[in-house]
Image 1 (cartoon, one colour):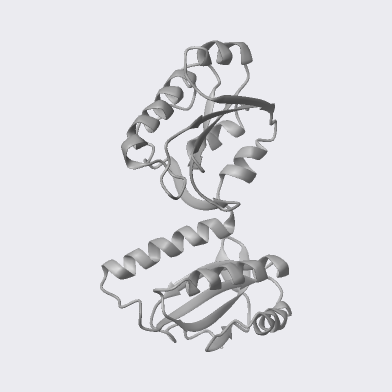
Image 2 (cartoon, rainbow, N blue to C red; image 1 turned 135 degrees about the horizontal axis):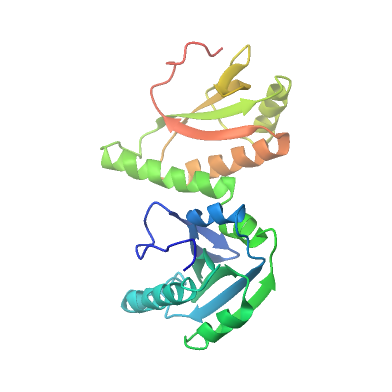
Length: 263
């Protein structure tokens, strides 16, 4: 058996599920985070991409009548292939009427023999010794992770009874290694026409985690959260942070002015 024992519930703690876009098509990606343990131990150098078409809805995702049949096929493929030695399931993508599953493996003969007993539409096998497909394609980017958290935060606020149509106090948090970058950051915010009430920052570096210290910067805004504005702001801040090599931590909804150490 593979060192990775796949749980039949793909929504368990070893899975990260998120929505993103591939070109003009929405995509749902599920990534097996448990497979990371195998990267430093037994690391297969080959990856198989198994594709099947499904009946889709208007968004290109599985339609309700065919959803369970499609997932039964996905789970059956995982069960069969992960019973082989050193086969690791990396994850799958649902987009534009097609389900793509990704498996890392070493023994191509055994894999093909097992696949001969399964039904699928296409198979692509490549070498991927550094697992670039997993780390650079399947795992969510920093922006995708923040978009997921934003959706979760909005759901939580709605469930708590917050009126998202009313302007809400928002704080965006950043870590800076170089205090001189703060002025550049403010300049880029103005050039991008990003509205904010004020920007606060610490005079000295604050201990964040372990030995890591950084200047803390907070951007305060008031936004209505029932529009795409918050998602646009997250994307803009992520792009600026990447350009300046600073860390955009994310945003929070809270009463402002509670952190007394900020200027």
